Image 1 (cartoon, helix red, strand yellow):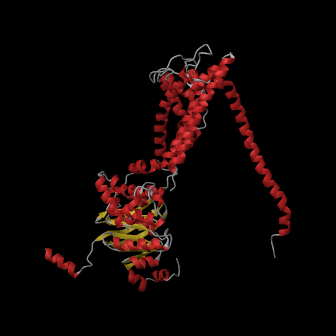
Image 2 (tube, rainbow over the protein chains, first blue to last red):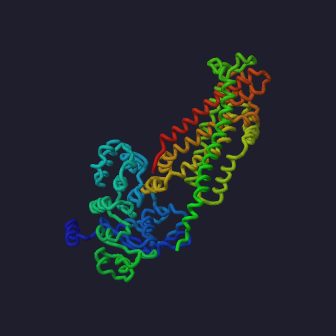
Image 3 (cartoon, rainbow over the protein chains, first blue to last red):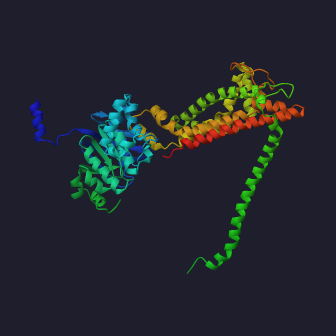
Length: 266
Length: 292
């Protein structure tokens, strides 16, 4: 048994599990349909980019993956999103449990008005970890994981608002790593950052994909091309095209995808 | 071709500039007028009451002889009153604000409640006195006790605390709540660990201003029938008591001029307490003020 699965892995090193299987997902804001019959399979341990013009539903989609969209009043969904085989849109699915496995990094850096240490320790603390030694380890590991440890190790007790925008965003990534998630959702994580900070976050994403499955919304197409393995192109609430990133950017199948990536609209 | 004639612009410059200067002086004059009135008021009170203000005045119980009379009972009474009003109004007020801002759905019922809370803030204090008389003094048979007075005053300042707390909670950016929810926090954890700590300066500022109002209010306590003259201190919340504004009211209604001076001295004590409380409010606001 072991040998055969090992052989299978050698024969097919690309064999990966599906983390998120979206089946016929519809979503309405009131009477306004924002997502139409979305079908996407997102694989583990790779970076999946979602691109598309403003208002195409890409942010709505990624916020549905950890049910953050429920914070918007008047949202209705139909269809299924299977996370590791279980439908997260099912009422019985505990949303808090989902969000401990699926972390999220937001468009604008949003650290808490607390110390750097407390920002990172917040997640573990709300999940009941009180042991100071373990918390210390988690904080260091997470800050190292987010490539910001060396910059902040001497001022862990200072307020997080003293950091620059790019540092704040990496702190938010560290905060997300601290709950040891399985998936990291990133909603335009670099759109509020300068080019150098953006580069650092992109390098970080390359490191993180070894351990985590990453889904990133971006309207920077070069960014999608640089960092992702697969890309989904959204337009008016529909998935127009979803395939390997290099295919999408070199030989798009759909005319609309081609128009978008060549900059003819959007 | 030019749509703006620069010559006429220059011609109109002069009246514009003089209006500009004139308006500055008008507003300065208005401010000075207010300060003047305040100054006259303070001068009258201080010139009359300052001579009576000594330790003996602070440590004596009221008396029929002006030279023996003091504000001790009223001062202690006011502190008792605060000891009831502060916890009751804070718990009820902050709790209500949390419900309205964090839990209540945005429908007509919650809007109706919100509008009415704001309206309550404008209801004359004597009406709250009547409410307290009916509910606490008579129906609950609390009599003219510390508790009856404290609960009445709590109701009086509750709307102010609720509105101030609501505003403080609303000022906490939504992105902080999202960040907390995104890490798997429950609503309650988010409120306790993120929203309230960020809202506390605003809540406390509002609460202290509301308590200052409760310290100075007289009308509702008169309606409750609180004693104006009391020569002993309350020992429990069920004992009767008197408070500073009542004591002042009592002295001003006496015919002897010495008592009027005592009233002025009492006012100085009351003003001092108010200034201290307002300063605390300002300090808290400055110390905890956070940027997001």
